[in-house]
Image 1 (cartoon, rainbow, N blue to C red):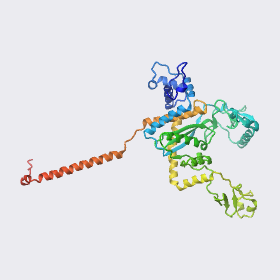
Image 2 (cartoon, rainbow, N blue to C red):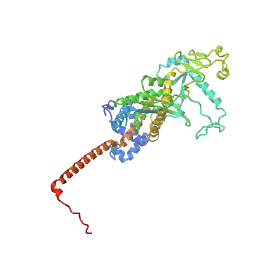
Image 3 (cartoon, helix red, strand yellow):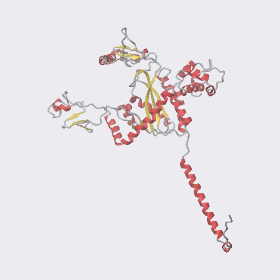
Image 4 (cartoon, rainbow, N blue to C red):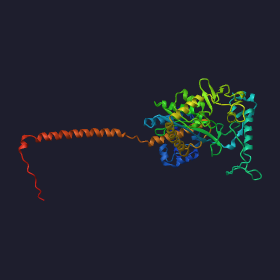
Length: 475
């Protein structure tokens, strides 16, 4: 009530109770219900849900549009506060240790159709850069950018000319009955007025659609989600790493836990991502992206002078890391090294030292690095699968990046709450063993003392003179 107090006024008709709102939302995520209409219908027909939200059997539940408007009314900070509260409960129960955080992402379908895409307004370059400061600049594109995208699309049309076309159900046909290939679209020159924050994206083997990008960080102790957020789907994983790590670090810090290692796949690898991790002294186990080459055959890198040295002794300085025609003209390896070109060119990123540092760490600790790959996959991937298939994170039923972020946070706190309810604190067996050893020692001590006392008592003179006759068996 304290967190949502500022969103309510003193006049007008009484609105929905914030506790009731979040309980109804929780029911929707627990039962994988994406529609607000179906959610209210489900809550109305279930006696146990009515008891949970404190509504009598004859009371009318809030209208479905009230749920939608209230979700838009509350800010992201309310949902984040609730997520942190559930996370702190998990920490108190000993479910989070902070040693390793596995990071991964998934596309979340936006509440908009590909048919809603329209082209952005095309401006001349000078006019476009002047309009960049305006509010609606994201709906405009420069002429140069449009020309580049169209050139790429024209190349695609020519390259795919003789390739078989799709035959999925619902494909459109022309007047002759031939399947029409969908027009090429790009986030650079198209946008959806239905949901301007949604972006066109695709994964191998799946159709292109408007999506958001869900990012998760999961603790490897008991698979509790320690960080969650939504981002634009046209970004790469490496561009989202800093945001999800900062969110996770802050969440753990509020619970007096230090961030340990970060486990991520090669999609999060980039020069900027490695620089961020290095600047903040964050230990990460993350394979370098596929195009990285630790060594170049026939060339040795001179770190002090920042240049490559050819096997024939020719220097390739940083100038453009290219040899001159004069140097390579009489080289015996010219045919194999240069091919049809006249000079040798090597291209490297300015973050080469960071890539080399990560590569060296992975190769020197190959066994541990291989184990971290398995830990990452078995930690975060099952969590993502559960959220998408069973906890309503597959599709956003609202619009906008802020609403998508609330959606991811609600799904994540629901997952954590289920883990919290089912988690059983096991008493350590070591304590039981220590107690049993102590009891055993006391028992042995008493037995020894009693035996010594018995011997001393029987050794008295009165008992020594007595003779005991052996009992006869009368059976």
